[in-house]
Image (tube, rainbow, N blue to C red; front, side, top):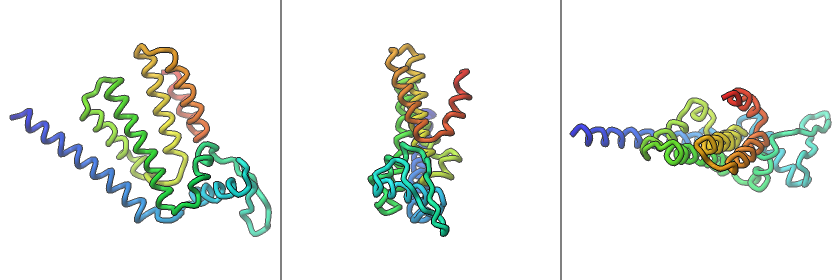
Length: 199
C-alpha cells in the first residue's frame, strides 16, 4: 500500500510540475511577451532584420536622431538563428525561444537517465525542476541569448561527464564543440567555464 501511495504521490507531483511549466510558458508568451517590451529584444530583432537586408554579420544600424551609425557586435549564433525568423510574429519567435529551454530540459532528463542511471521519473523530475528554477521562471520566453548558451553549456557538461564515465575521446571533441557554440551564443559563459574548470 505504501508503494502504491508513493507512486500516486509521485505521479501527482510530476503532473503539477508539468502543469506549472505549461502555464508559465503559455502565460509569458500570450500575456507578457506578446510584443518586444525590453530594449534587448527589440535590438536583437532589429539587428536580425538588418542582417538579412544588408547581408552582413555585423550590420550598420542607425538608432539615434542624430543620424549616427553604429556597428553592434551581438551574440553571433543567436543572431544567425534569428535572421530567418525575425519577420515572424513576436509570439511565434518567443515560442521558438521557449522550445530551446524544452530541448535543454530533455537533455537534462536524458543525461540523468542514461548517464547517471536515474529512474525515469527522477530524470523527468530533474527536467521539470530545471524549467521551474527562478532564472527560468523569470526569463522564460524572453528573447535573450541565455537559453541558447545554457543548452550548449549543458551539452558540454554532458559530454564531459560521458568522457569521465569511461567514454571515448570523441566526447572531448563533442565537449569542445559545445563550448565553442556556447561562447558564440553568449560571452558570459566564460565566467561559468572559469568556475567549473578546476572541478
